Image: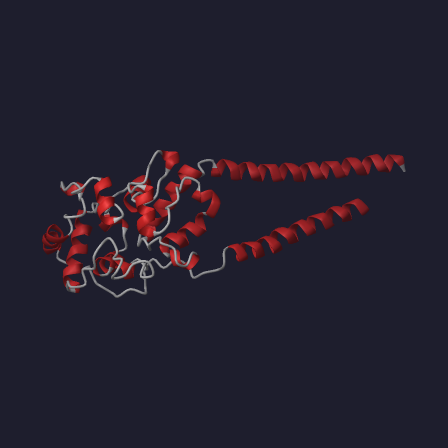
Length: 285
């Protein structure tokens, strides 16, 4: 009975450490913040549901293709990656999937004032402008037309890797999947003020919950970071995190299954060891 009580004490102490101390340590390392806001409620409401895609196409041709490619519509990027990054500090994204992966109101606000929408006013100003200029001289109706055009050409389905490429690869590499950042590392560092990390193992170091929160609003978790608020809709963001996980933690299911089996094995072994010890000491007595 004494040994059994000791076993219970050890189990109790282990439980207290795991369910008491570990959450406390986690709260210190990762302070609680507001959940991800996929509606971007801080932004002005610009209704793009009634936008005119035909008019939007004219505006895009007049204002966007000078810097951006739209490969799905036959418009290649006007400059190669090296030339574009040297000119702008970062490679402008291809816009073929913009209407599919970005939240529509965020996209409208980004077109109107990218520095404000991306929450990078602490990094960019009049003396150091953001790579993309503000189109706040346009009316909200014109901006809604542009968003409607992007929605009209958006693909029905985009793979997880394709979302990552369109939303993240301009700055970030995924070397474990042989994807290199489109913008040269030193060019991006000079312009943004810091290097953009390779994301191959980010899922293992930060975890899924952290990545969702950080992608949705980087300033919540790393105030002053040069990482912009990307503006992905909830589905596209899940695809990015799923892709990062598939590359950096492809054995997650197997690892978690093995962990449960190991715990069950140790529990059974502990019971058998206790019964065996009890039998031996009973014979001795």
